[in-house]
Length: 440
Image (cartoon, rainbow, N blue to C red; front, side, top):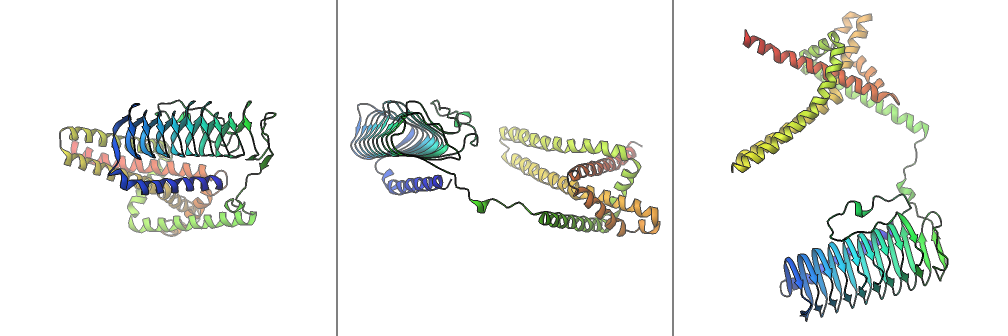
């Protein structure tokens, strides 16, 4: 939604401006550390800038508070603005001026009081019953549960929004449709030290909610609004669809032209690759074709085995890299560890590239060449022994088979398994000959 993007942009600009302004001050009037606590009897008579893993304010800051950390809790009083960003930001005390917060889990406790505006962006925002925002509230994020009160206008945008509290003036809501949003942040954010509410996708005005002014919301259909919940005018806007981003479905002529172009491209690619192999590795290709022709059923069966063996080999290389790295790292042989990792990465790269190249083009070239030779052998045996015509004829046939609608993918898999199996049998035979010679 464009409005959400605008809100997020504004918030980011505010945050960057705040950073630019506060960075010089961090060197002079700031606190940093793993855990920082401003005790209840402590008063900071100036602006305070904090970076910490965990920060808790129980005392008073007589100025602005800017804090960045993992877990931030405001229990005391901030007599100025609050700018906070972290994984979890909880406000349980009083901020006399504006609040700008961002994080995964944002929460206003039941005794929280914000004397100015609230500007929040994050995965989840909950304003508990009893909390107060005396001026405007603006939120953009995945979900929001508003059970507290807002003294003036509120603007909310997200995938799941529920209003339970009171908004003194106008409410504007841009919310995703019910059923269109992803899972609740509570399902994938589990290190916040606070419980996240579960808000159903879409927009809901709960029983007991109160909107003192107009209610403007964006949805494709009317939502249920409890009687007496809105004092002003209710206006629903249709979601704006950016038609420029919706691709128009191709016409039958365009679809046919696209399929024909793809077919010609695949045939030409297969033919060129086959001619290249016929020139560079004729004996290798002849050996594979002989294996496939002499043992068609074993070729298909061993192709299935080779397909599974590829993924097993990838897993084995990764395990060797991890175990080797840990073992030699424990022996303080860092150089050996680096060599193992680099060799493992190169082996993974070579194995993946070789597998993709052979299954994508090698198998199809092999079947195309063998098929073309078999067909030409029925009509003109002399042409069947040629290195060019069997490849061209077979490329046209295989290219057509793998591009057939609905069943082309099946032909592709069958051809791939035949080719992998022939390669497996050929390699196994070549490796067995040196072993047998050594035994003799």
